[in-house]
Image (cartoon, rainbow, N blue to C red; front, side):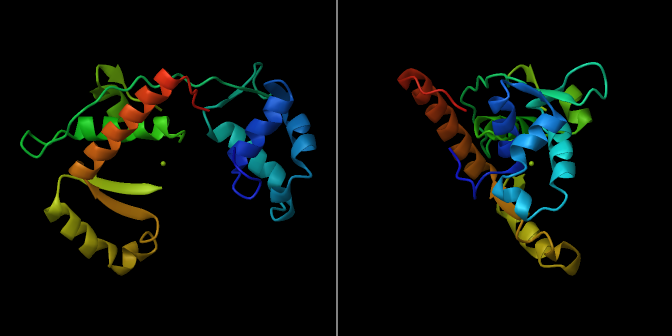
Length: 192
């Protein structure tokens, strides 16, 4: 469980809705959250809560529209299978993107893929799941190009937010995460 200092606004709102039994009105969420330490440093915390319940897929508005009621939504389990990206086979952007989206879901992140990719591509026979910034590309040529571009003035503001990873690094992380998920299920540990 995250400490209060580590809690994101998403965590804070989730905890408030859990306290309310999984569903509540914005005014009830605000009442529960108003004394949270995060509100002391955010004078617009009520607006932040309104943005959070609209931004994340774990929160869903309860009809009718604009009722102010929201509920927690159970996120579908990610059934991931091992996958391999190799430099010997043709570069497959769809597999790389699918691995990244699946990793995000395994680690509890909100993930995003452009609408055109969600409809045009699939990963392991399934449509895309509905993002810290990573540039993931085949190899060292792309890493060199990334290193040169990130030094340019127009990209400097992204330097701390963007990381380059090659397909080999993605392959290792993805398969380690899938194996960890399998071991966790066998042990009986449920992901949050």
